[in-house]
Picture (cartoon, rainbow, N blue to C red):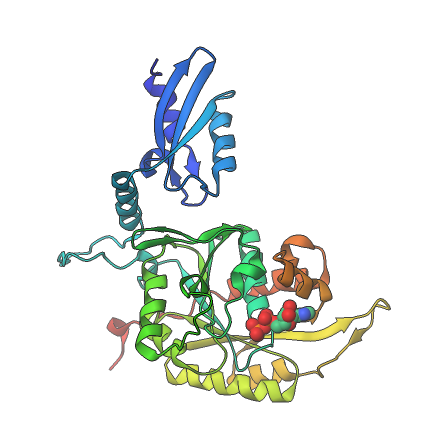
Length: 371
Ligand code: ADP
C-alpha cells in the first residue's frame, strides 16, 4: 500500500552524506510502501555497494523508526539523470550573455567570486612530509567545520588515499567522478586513473588533461577548501594549475635544514614566475619532543623562518616529528583523527586556524586597475 505524501516527502528530504543533497533530488528514493510489518523504503543507488549505505539507513530510520530499507541499483537512465543533476548542481549559474555551446559549464568553485579557496601544497623536494601535511591539514580544516576536498596530483607517487585510509575507489558516473568521503574530507587521487603495472610518463598535454579533468569534472561541489598535493619541484603541474586554477594559493613545505630550504626557495620562485600567490611556509620535522619534555632539533633549526623571511611571507606552522604521524600515514589512520590531543595534532589544528585567519589571496580585479 502506498504511503501518504507527507511521509514520502519527509524521506525525500533526507540528505545523502557523500553528495550532500536530498535523496529526492538525487533520485535515490524508490518505492515507499506500507506493508504488513511496517514501512518499507527502497533506496535506488548508483552502485549496490554505496559507501554511505549504513549512514543513509540510519538517517531514514531516524525519520521513520522501524522502517525496513531495501536497495536496488540504478538503471542506465537513472544513472544518467543523476549525472545530469550533479553537473547542474556544481555548475556556475549562466551569467548574462551566456551562450550554450553544448558542453558542460565550468564548475562554480572555479568562479572568481566563489567562496572556495584552493591551496596548493608544494615542496622543493620529496620526503619533507608534503603529503602528510596535506592530509592532516585537510582533516584539521574539516574538524574546524569546513567543507574540504583534497586532490592528489603528486604524479611521482600517489599516496593520499592510503594515508587517509580511503577504503574504496571513487565512483564514476559516466564522465563524472565522485571523490571518496573519508574522515569528513573528499579525496580524489590521479593515481586511481593510472593502471598499476604501467609506468606512466607524464608528458605535458596528458598531464594537463588529467589534472583539468579531475578539477573540472569531479563532484567537488563548492567546498570551502580544495587542497592539492603537488609534485615536488618546479614542474609542469604548477604550470597547468596556474592555467586551470589561477586563484590557487601556494604553501611551501620545508624542513629546518638549510639545504631543504634552498630547494624550497627555488620552487617558490618558480611559482611566483607563474604569477601564483605564495602565501605561507610550513616547516615540518621541526623538532622531536622526548619523554623528558625537551625538544631535540634533529634536522637543525631555522629553515622555515629563513625561507619565510626571504620570500617575505609568514611561517604559518611548525610541525614536530612524531612516530605516530608516520605510523598513522602507513596505516591510513591520520594522527589528527587518531590522537587529536597529541602535540603534532594540535600543531596541525593551529596551522589550519592560521590558514583560515589569513583569508583568501587578494583578488586582482582588472576593472579596478588605476591607470
Ligand atoms: P612527501 O610527500 O614530501 O614526499 P611524505 O608525507 O610522504 O613526504 O613523508 C615522508 C615520510 O616521512 C613518510 O613516511 C611520513 O610518514 C614521514 N613523516 C613526514 N612528516 C613526519 C613527521 N612530522 N614526523 C614523523 N614522520 C613524518
